[in-house]
Length: 404
Ligand SMILES: C[S@@+](CC[C@H](N)C(=O)[O-])C[C@H]1O[C@@H](n2cnc3c(N)ncnc32)[C@H](O)[C@@H]1O
Image 1 (cartoon, rainbow, N blue to C red):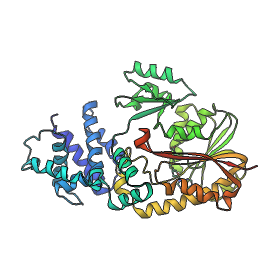
Image 2 (image 1 turned 90 degrees about the horizontal axis):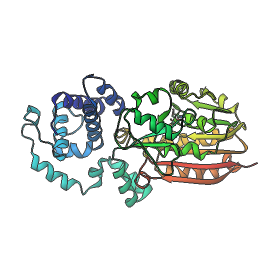
Image 3 (image 1 turned 60 degrees about the vertical axis):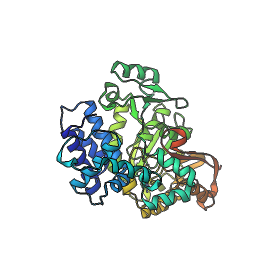
Image 4 (image 1 turned 180 degrees about the vertical axis):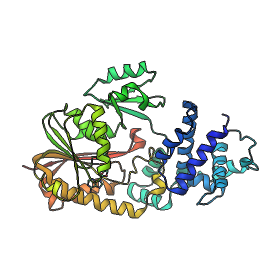
């Protein structure tokens, strides 16, 4: 591979924004890709993948390059040189690469690879937490998997098309996809492509959604005509899926504390041809109280650490703080106790997270079931999904039934 100066500059600019200005990696990459219209898909792929890779392995590359945060541009070039050397890419004779100690880099890499905190590139506190919660063996495998690039997965919008028709339509647009065993609406791209530019996307035939994320709405056993509350709907990935499973019949009440997220959901619902969603901002306890005992089904897709989806948000490793996890656990427990009251007797509820930590998952359910609010509920089943076992994102989901 030959390095192109303007693409490498874009990578360095992106890293500067992510590491030093705290910008989100996905937003930074999105804006970098708009910088030059002449860039083709290979150039865009280089920028996105290199930025993500250096973000993933920040701790390892910084240690090998012997640089410390905050990283100035020279430091970022040194980390870039480490990345390129380990990839076996020949460094051009640019001034940034003068005196790069190629042999020493490889030696340091071999040495540091024996230590998970460097090989998987994670902060010490997170490594301790992972071992404490999952045990050494599982954590080692899981955190290694979370450093891989995630596949692009689509969810067929069954309100508008079928999986087979969508596959044909995408093939007409030169995009190859494959079925995934056990995931009824999913299509996987064996090769990455910008699916948002396709006609099929503009027509609302699919949404981009991880395969295991597609399991969550399915877990809730909804049917057409029901009154379903999606209490932490965000921009509505699962709301849209619920509406499709309900064949646009009945009512989905999509709630969130952020109106801005629900506004995005509104746009997506229009593209998806979804007509049965009502949006409600949670700006006090009132909207929840009004729904006490009314919902046939409740989805709590709770705010969480996001440790199951690090492949998609690698910068979360550096942004997460132990205090955030402690606080989010309190929020999860409050949400469970307050929002569960919306389920009517005989109704069902799913509590889900995109975390792999038992303390955010099954422990929350155990605590809820022994609390005064939880005594009306019976545990039906749960699923603990780890990325290294399933090949897709890490998730947790529990199904509970409200007693009659
Ligand atoms: C995991 S995300 C939801 C993702 C969304 N369901 C989807 O499938 O695209 C969790 C959501 O919970 C929202 N949230 C945080 N605290 C909340 C609260 N107390 N009540 C309701 N929603 C909350 C966040 O704004 C965020 O959108």
